[in-house]
Every structure is written in structure tokens, then in C-alpha cells.
Length: 186
Image (tube, rainbow, N blue to C red):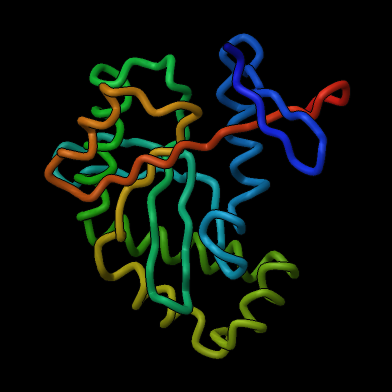
């Protein structure tokens, strides 16, 4: 039996990502991040972070900052067809190790600060939040502590993926379903 969502008499069907295209899922997540993390959430594209001793670099799909709450998240967006233990777990483990590196967190603070300074919409959003006067300090206070968790955004939660939540660091698995309106598309 096919899944369907009906809202106000209109039918919506699950969307299938063309050719296993993870980029489609990434774009849709970015477009809707404010509905997931809140209106004042800030999303930044991933930037390379390195482990302290081995210098191994890794790039998460993004970071979400909630400056008012002094919280931040590392975000990894994946399709459920990707291998959990040979692909996703090694990635998030490297994120967890790299983010403990103080110099990498300082680089992230500088990166986020510079991106905000260059983007008029982000600056306006920050001003509305009331943290623009001490933006660098707010970023530092937020990123000085470990992230709240690593968030894995995925199109479908599998039983194998549930085991990831048992890793020795905070991991949230967020199922992000996409539906198409009947006879219209995405």
C-alpha cells in the first residue's frame, strides 16, 4: 500500500530523490531549517574542520546556530540508502573528534562572524535577535562549548541508523520526509 498524506482534500505522495541525489535533500533541508530549529536559527554551509593530532580534515554539510540559546549543532544530511557503518558513522566520528580541537572552533567562530558581516540579511536577523553589539563574543560563548549534538538529517530512519544513537556522543537522527502534491510535483 502506498503512503499518502491528505491535507484540506489535497493528496501528497512521498517524493523519491532522483538518481539518489543527496543534493536535493540538502537543498530542501536548508530551505526549511527555520521550521525545524526555529525562526532565529542560523544555517551555515559546512567548512572543513581538522582533528588535532592527525590533522585529518572532514566537512559536515552544515552548522546550525541558535545564538539566543547559546546552542549549536553539526548537521550531516544523508540518504537512507547510504551505508551506515562504512559511510555515516566514520564521518560523524571525525566531526566529534575534530570539534574538540580549540583552534578549529576558533576558525569556525571567525568564519561565521565574517559570513554574518558580509550578509545584510543575516546582519538584520542578528540585530532583531539583539546580539549584534557583541556578536563575536556571542559566537565565542556559543562555540566554546561542545555542540549540543550532531544531527543526522535523513530521508528515512532505518533500524541500523537507530543504533547510531548509541554512540558515545550526542547524536540526533532527524527524519526529513518530502512530499509532492498530486498532479503538481515538488
